Amino acid sequence: MTSDLVARIVESGDLSEQWTPTFERVPRENFIPEIIWDEERQAVHRADAPHRWNQLVCADAPVITQLDDGAETGPGYISSSASKPSIVAMMLEALDVAEGYRVLEVGTGTGWNAALLADRLGDERVTTVEVDPVLAEAARKALADAGYHPTVLCGDGMAGSPASAPYDRVIATAAVQRVPYAWVEQTRPGGRIVAPFGTAFHNGTLLRLTVHGDGSASGRFGGNVGFMWVRDQRTPHGAVEDRVRPEHDYTETTTEVHPYEPVADFDASFVVGLQVPDMKSTVVHDGEPAEGRFTVYLMDPDSGSWASWRVTPERVGGYRVRQHGPRMLFDELSAAYTWWQQTGRPAHTRLGLTMTAEGEHLLWVDEPGRVLSRG
Ligand SMILES: C[S@@+](CC[C@H](N)C(=O)[O-])C[C@H]1O[C@@H](n2cnc3c(N)ncnc32)[C@H](O)[C@@H]1O
Image (cartoon, rainbow, N blue to C red; front, side):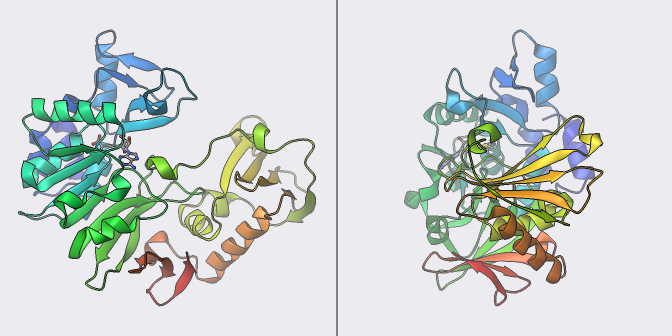
């Protein structure tokens, strides 16, 4: 990573003195493959377009390093990336490591984050797990070329890595919708787990859990981090046309609720996603977004349920809502949004999660006793 970028991240307050020398010693570009993809999913070959490659790699932005799990063709789903440097810094700060700590990383990707950890803590204290064998091998090589030799394992990181447990810290660099209990089991009491946590409806925020002596773990959410999902928690794809069919029957009502808050506000939509499981949303604009003429589709791929919520600037008598299938998705969203409004419109930082020793997830607001949902 260029020292310019390191300086900018320091200036923005995301990188402390403890981590700065490590970021300066471990350049991100040494871990980025020769072929990457830009935001339009166009391949950029370092050999053919060195300037463009450098531009993408030296920016404070994620770099796409794999599409469609490495398949030659596919829909262009991002399956691996080098995370945005300022987010990497923010997550390592949240991890709160100290000399002598042993860390498990889930999601090796390029190996850059593992190199940063190995530089700070020592090779023997870092274990990293990558599910994709090609990526695991490439990361192992990039790490060795840069002079780092943490333990790089290829496997499902949801199972952790019991062989090197217990850990002082566990960090996931792929997002979860459920924290696997294996991570709690493999962290010592007083240890910490840091993971991007989201829902089918909301990209996610950062969860910081502290592990307790009784086998439970608890902590709060905080920070805007959107990551790709761990492989077995990906939400199903599918275009609106595949899920909302002309032959479907539906009920029709109207609402005074505009989607701006329940769908687009970071805090409101986080709560909606937590309370309305497995619901995805897609916004389809009629023309330019500025015209304000669009339909929000809410879809549950498993049950086939959907709702459409029509927004036009010249609405008369409320916005039209259609609902199809066994789940009334708009009604569920509306109830969750009302709860958020009536609870004082809590910021996501007022929410937390407790994992019991039995692996149950309790979501709460303000304090562990005020449970919002369990599952
Ligand atoms: C955002 S990338 C990680 C970035 C990485 N830490 C770096 O420094 O480049 C997420 C990675 O998680 C991996 N992954 C997804 N599910 C996984 C799982 N169940 N176990 C281990 N790795 C997983 C993906 O293959 C991908 O490489």
